[in-house]
Length: 207
Picture 1 (cartoon, rainbow, N blue to C red):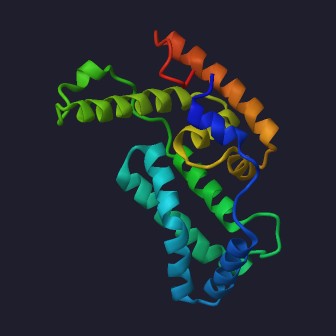
Picture 2: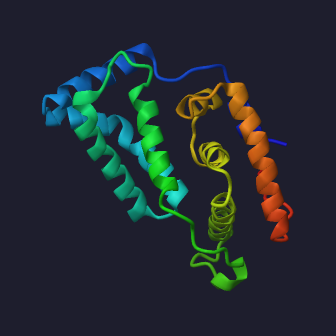
C-alpha cells in the first residue's frame, strides 16, 4: 500500500508551472542567451533550491549534490542560446531531468552495512536516532535501487526523493500519469523482492 502522503500526491489533479512562470523562465533564458548574468542569477534563485534538495536526497552527499547542481546550471548557460521557448519542454521539467540523470550517473552507492555497525549515533536523543534510522533507510533504498531497470529507478527516485506531484513527475519522465503509476507498481514490486533477498521484509510504507 502507498503511504498516505504519497497516495495523496498520486491523486492530485494535474498542475505544474503556470503559464506566467513558464513565460518568465523563457524570458530569462532569452536574456541569458544574450549574456545577461543578472537573468542567470534570477534563474538560479528560482530553481536552485529545489534542484539541490533533490540532488542531496538522491546522492546523500552535500558536496556531490552541490557539484551536480553547479554543473546543471553551467549547462543552462551553455544551452540558453539554443533553447526553444515554444517547444514542448518546460524549463523546470528539463532541469529536473538534467539533475536526476546526473544523480543517477554518479554510480552505485556504498554497500549497505547494518545499523549496528555504525556505532552510537552522534545525537543519542530520540530525534538523533530517528535521523540515523532515516539515513539508514535511504542507504538501503539507494543500494537496492541501483540494480533496478533505469526507468523504474527514475520513477522511484522521483517518488521517494522529491516533493513533486505525480503529474509533475510523469511530465519529467515523459509519461502519462497512468503509465507512471504502472511503472511505480512494477518498481515497488521489484524493490520488495530485492529487499526480501537481503532478509528485509519492508521499510514502513515503501513496500
